[in-house]
Image 1 (cartoon, rainbow, N blue to C red):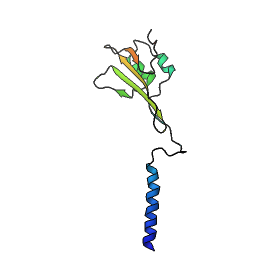
Image 2 (image 1 turned 90 degrees about the vertical axis):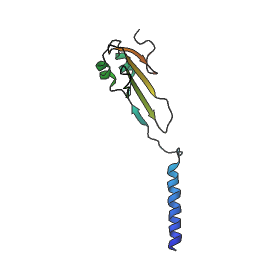
Image 3 (image 1 turned 180 degrees about the vertical axis):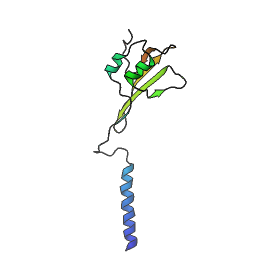
Image 4 (image 1 turned 120 degrees about the vertical axis):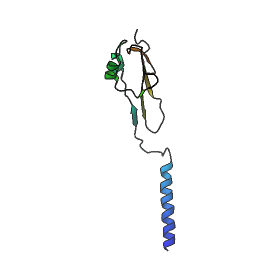
Length: 115
């Protein structure tokens, strides 16, 4: 009798735990996860060519990626995903040799910036 109870208990436990391994269980709520810097159009409109790195950091915050080998490039990346999918928002800030803002790149950069 105990042996049957143990087998049934182990079977139920393994079946219930195997359900946790399914990547997309239908009709379940998936929490949206935000990662990186949220960059708004208002923040981007405040950026002007010739700004110092300190001024840019004040407006945009600390960059998500500061390349050790290219000190004149900062990358701001933001993703918001609920269960995967979606392309990240990117803004790359390029500084000149003198440490002033020269260029914006990425899908958040306005095409007429600096004109």
